[in-house]
Length: 271
Image 1 (cartoon, rainbow, N blue to C red):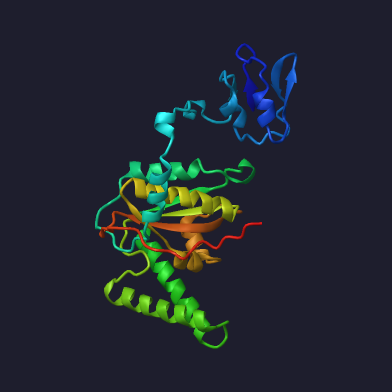
Image 2: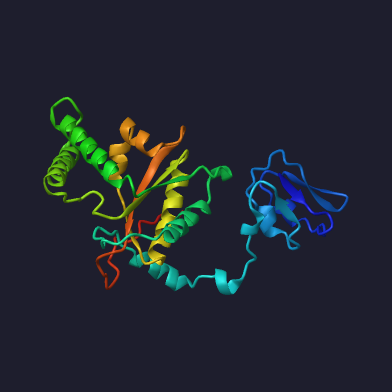
């Protein structure tokens, strides 16, 4: 629950103003948290000028005091960082250190979630990557065959992907050519109850991946293969009530980009 240290509280009311569910009231000049409608967002902890509020549900030693020097990011640098990111499909045969993977997950863990559900989970696959590859290639082959045998739904796009998956499967089985995971050493699979929560976490995780000198590919093909596939779900031990949102293929890039790339003009409507 959320707690107020009455000896520190100066009754400024900042926590009351910033509490969205209105779970904090003033009582005899001090803040009082009812802990009824509270969903543990932590805004009261962050806004209190006297550091008088804490929780016994999370680790308070993770809380950091704001410092402009170490927290603020230059606007143009941030925008350039976003523009320079590239999807990586060429990786060096080099392992990714555990501490870097934990940094990437930390970026996802601290990403906002709807109603502070904190419903995002992270599955790191290294030792069982070969097994996961085999299941994924076989599953894509099965989907492709079903799409082309006349019994499944097939349009021009589906037919194109189906033929691609069949060719990828053939190459993988024949000579190990990996056009799905590109021989990256590790993948992180992000699961969540809410797709929005999982997607937001994945985006911040990619920022951290790039900041660490790594590269990533979001494998939509894997997500398609894993959808409602019991073998893949059993291998990964997907938690009940959660779904696979993204699959981040991660490694050290074996390519060096020199510049950003152009994009379509922004589609903006001003109302």
